[in-house]
Image (cartoon, rainbow, N blue to C red; front, side):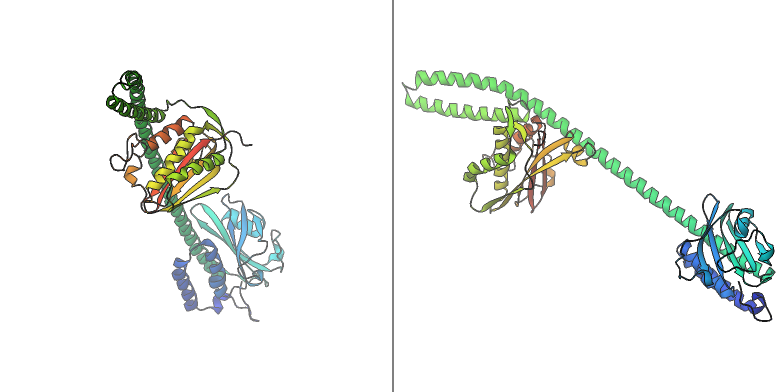
Length: 452
């Protein structure tokens, strides 16, 4: 729309060719930096059409189905709220002058709206109107519309100006849409690559877990078979030592001392056999309902003898622990093993934190896959220390039978393997987190009975 004088001159007569060229030149330069369609439409309405002396301007955008036009930007009295449009007008394709232009894809100039039956009166009825479609490719992306309170306000000059504006706007909209499509494709590729990388990593992790499970299973079978056969040998040795002790010891005390030493060695061998059977998950377990908190308290009562004054112990219990059905003696032995390992990792003193938590494991949880846990409810008993930590390359070996970092004669290397075997046989598991210089945390997952 244009501002008319009493002599009623057109915008083309009011604006010099130099002014038009300057406005279009600025548009061509500035349009390159406009980042999105919304900014573009408001820029066109206010800084292009507005500077061409049109009285008002309304820009409509089309939906993807090309059935509805929606008011997106405006100038003049139809834009009283800045860049906010309250209840934007929606016009179906084919309805009214604007809808007909969108449907027919042809610009229209109406010299007197009083003689046009398809005119839809606005809040302030006008007398003349110019309407130009915005098209790129085979799509109508919108319409630029302007009205004027006087009849015959628009001519060929205004049509050429608005058509040029519509063409430049359409070209930029097409560029913005292509940029958006490219960005979506890029993000889709990034997402696909991320998913692929995650799947590859998951597959590698699963392959590593499968390899580790098979390795431990093979070691377990070997250990179990060896322990079973060796146990039979020890039974025969121990029986014969007892017979010899009864016959010889009363006659020769020196020989009796030798037999006593042999019996002590035999008992140590039997203890090793029990540990190996526990790792091989062939130990005889007597399950009973156990309260983990009570088990921790009782174990700490008599484990104080192995802890120096330089090591403090703290217990964390967030809620009442669910009951579990496990072998109490084996569970106490597992906890004591972890406490002793924590002590040995802190030769200069430190702190042991024991935490008891109820956890529910779902089939979809990464934790279930990593720990090879069946879905269900578990009581997690965690033992943390502030010690030296375990090197990463040793984390895969710590549960192997006879693996130890202690000097010769200071450990059998069966403590953690016994814990591992017991937890597996009890339908639970053991996991470890560790960082050099920060300490280690061992997690025991005990299968829980239905919560009380």
